[in-house]
Length: 282
Image (cartoon, rainbow, N blue to C red; front, side, top):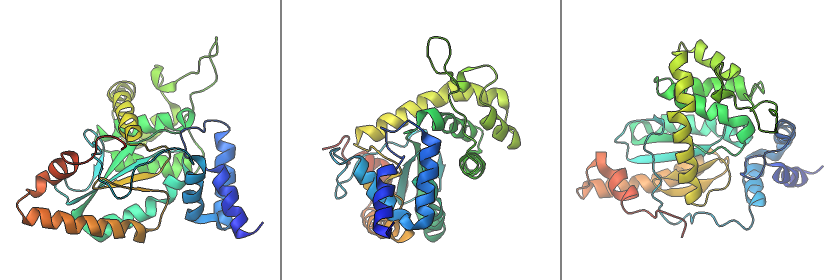
C-alpha cells in the first residue's frame, strides 16, 4: 500500500467521532498499525474530515465563547491565552497530541493555560476514564490521573468498559455499582486518593460535569476529537506543535493589545472571549 493509500485507509478507520461505538479495540489496533507505518497526524486530520463531510463545524476565523467553569486546568488562571482541549481517552489522535501540549506549556509558560474538557465519543470505553479523571481532579490529582489513564489505561488497552449486558439487554455501568470500576479504582489507589469520595464523585458531580462538557462542545458544532479552542478560535486534529503555536502567537498579540488598552489580565478570557464570543455555531 502506498503512503497515500495508508492515509486514506486511516481516514476510513478514524475512531474519534461521535458516530463510532462498535468494535472499538479492533479499530484502535488497526488505526495504530497504520499510524506506525506512516499515516501520521495527517491521517488524523484527514480522517476526522472524512468522518464528518456534511457536518457544519466552527468557523476557524471566528471566536467562540467556550465555557470552562469546573473543568481541570493546567496553567495560571490569569493566563493571556486559554487553550481548551476537547478529547476522549480511547482516541489515538488525542494520545498523539499529548507531546505538543507539553511542548506548548513549556514554550509559553504562564502566558498559556490548557483546559481539559471531556468529549466522550466512545462511551462504552472512555466514560469511566472521563469520570475518573474528573474525580481525581476534585482531589487535586488531575495531571497524575491523566498520565495513568494514557500510559497504563490506553497503551495497555486496560479500559473500564460498561461490561456485559444485564438481563433485558441494558449495559452494566461500573461507576454506578458499589464496587465501582476495577481499573480506574486501581489507579485511584495508586495515587492515594480517598476511594469512597472518588467513587461518589464519579457517579455524582462528575457525571454532571461530563454531561455539561458534552453539551458545551456539541453546541459549537464539534463532532470529533481532538478539538481545540484557542482563545475561542477553533482547531482540530492531531497537529504538530507549530500549528498550535502559530494561532497562539496571534491570540497572544491580540490579548496583549487588549490588556494594554485597559482590560484586566485576570478578566481577559471572561470579558473578551466569553463575553463577546459566539455562543453557538453560526
